[in-house]
Image 1 (tube, rainbow, N blue to C red):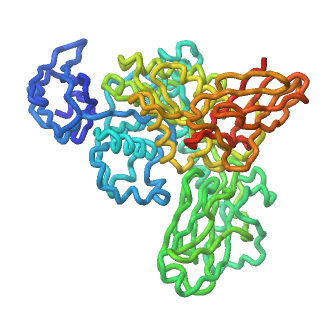
Image 2: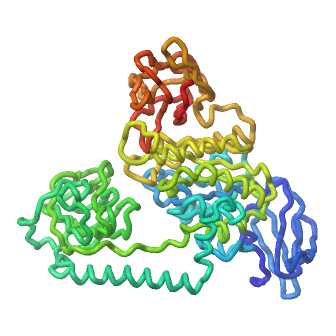
Image 3: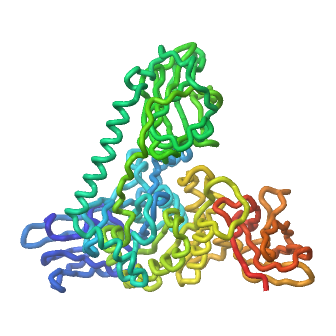
Length: 617
């Protein structure tokens, strides 16, 4: 029966969308019994279709399926609400990454009716696929929760706690992917150059050759680096290595601070620490923040862990390796493209359950080998239409409650197209699904990089503006995550509050709950008597400043210069700016930077004011 052509969504443990008909497509004629009724499929354009009648929330149900080739049963089916969880790495991020922040989630036993389906990560440039190539449903447990999308999990929990409806999460996400990779050729008809770019990779044999050549080049570079690395040859990881003549470096830092700008190759870092007998006998945790690009970590000559690329937090553990007295920590760092370093303002320590030794400060370092820039990897998933064809199209013919979307970071190199692309994606998915008001909730980008003044050209601010503009489409909602980011991490860990804000948006949109989502939004600007008065909606019980006592500021563009101006809260929903000293005020900007330094305004519910740029008339 595996060759019957059924979607892998139709499998044990599935959640079926309640209150709507459900299509069952196949490659052969089927008979199906479900919820006390029998159905026979009919042939439509070389495929077979039967449509199950709507069922109310509940279960468990079974689906008995038979054909000329045999029969089988799909069991443990529940009817509830099915949410597509789509986007790039911040939607893909699994609970495993969040374990140290939200460990209590592994103790939960009250949510067996939240189910996850992970769509296989594949791309196809030949056209839209009919069905997925794999995937199965899982229920949360201590053994499986680590696989759940963090954003999806916390969103589903809130939904289930409030409404008691089974929740299906269909995670179709892939890190590092731009919006156009999730769009159909139809949606991209106004961008023929993007369609053409995707079509370049319609030849699978060519793609295999590209992948092989890329892999061979990377492997050759890495093999050469290993052979040239004096540290590996001379075993610098061992505690007997004399590091007295190594150079000093203050960690954490970018390696450029040590005169290693644009360095590619291997750097060895070493530090001796003293520990007590009590420390030595316990399980020891070593947290090193994030490191660019790859690392291998040793304690007293024994490898305790390694990570192959820059983004994951370095969290290692060991027992029985540490001894009383002096111990040596050694980190072998591979720098791929001249951006090496240990990220600042991240946990950088070694600790037990009751004692911590901070590792920040003076370390020793020595170059093991210098190299050319590492050959670039090739990511097919970043090209237009590929992910849509393989990971979205097969889903849109099945009913959904809605979509939650977290994406935008990978469009920062060309932000000006994002507004049109994002709207086209939403409209196209709705058209393809047959639901012109398919609820679409999305996360507005958080902060990124070091704090800075407002800048009209900020790519992340332009993308945030485009995301907010999509709220003009019907049946949309947004979670403003401006304050939930981390300046030094593209993958902030506070997915719980992001999800709570998505839930607020869903409550407002789907259940008509009166709340202040997505936060204060600029409605109008009035200029009178040398002052600007800016009015907002979604202020709840009023505007406030966080942290309390901090003076909020906006930027006013006056003729050819930009002036930082203090803002005063002048009412429940209004702020006032004195512009009497400015000759030609033209625009006012708030929180308009990748990481705006001035972003202190919130509503009484704790939701941040949305960034804005407005003309002064």
